[in-house]
Image (tube, rainbow, N blue to C red; front, side, top):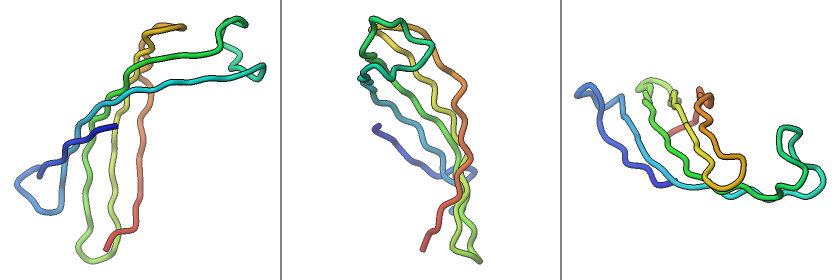
Length: 91
């Protein structure tokens, strides 16, 4: 994934980020149960958008992001249900 970051709300404590990339999945007989038995690979595109806040008094950053994905080859469709809340140690 390639991401671009910038300052949010004119504050040094908040940043936004946006980006994109791609994905390729391969599997054998232990394929996910929602995939056709003959399909062994998936190719698609990913996006990400989010907001991060950093605490000044403790070494902690919290971010919330949304990561939609679309499969182009095999099992085509949009997956827009990936949301993450992250806590990271910073210095």
